[in-house]
Image 1 (tube, rainbow, N blue to C red):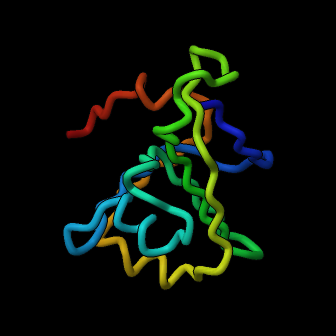
Image 2: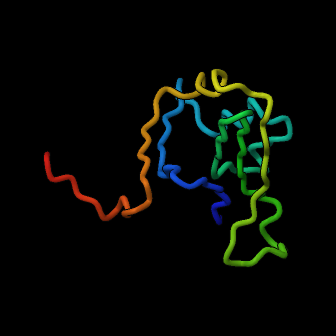
Length: 118
């Protein structure tokens, strides 16, 4: 999936890992918060969180019923996009027990750096 992230100059970008609270999963989150979400039909594969003037949570899910006979490039994975714009940040964080985030200026690849003061 191509990233459609629009960064402003001097912004940091990176990676984050999230642990869901109470042994929940991304599937549990989707079932509880997306009206049209059906676990038998969809498999959540990614989540994007935008925090700014508004909070927008976008879930990308594989549509298991539309994998064959698709007009999508066979090298790509067709997904359905679900947007949640009615949830505030406190509700979102109630699903999360912890997260780890690394942000970079982008001047160097995070994979290429090595900590020398262990």
